[in-house]
Length: 162
Image 1: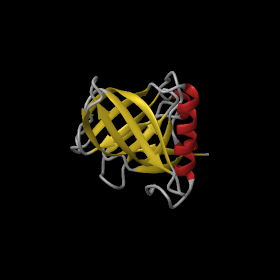
Image 2: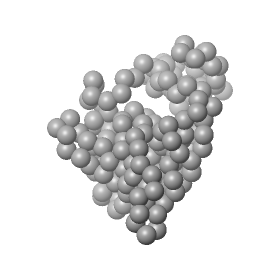
Image 3: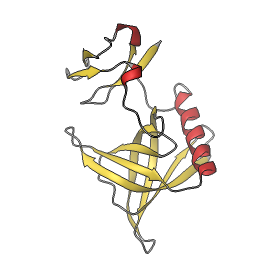
Image 4: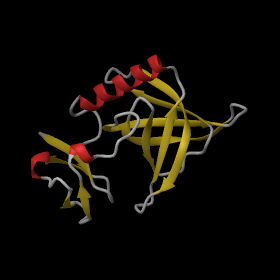
């Protein structure tokens, strides 16, 4: 069964058959940037409170201060998502505060969710990874995640996976 593996450097995504990975992990070479990194088998992957699902959706973000004033906004790529939060990659640093995330489906219907910035760090490529913790109700978060993954899996609509 193939796994989707992101390059640790350029974050390009590749399909890799889990059967060829050594039990302790295997070194792989990114065909896009030449980075060599270790891939671990599925049973050795990092254990988190919530399972993460890889994605490549385009997301609009809006950051507000405590008074409700808009302090930053932009576009980002959702790298992965779970019931607890979402990892975004953007060209600008996302400012802390209440974060509103919005996307659209194929019929141009918007859907959104609220969160708060957990962390933001600059990558070696000059972009920013920002972890957003969801603060909306579980029902609202589940609806957002379901729509986002459905749109991602609709081939040809969202960003291309290599």
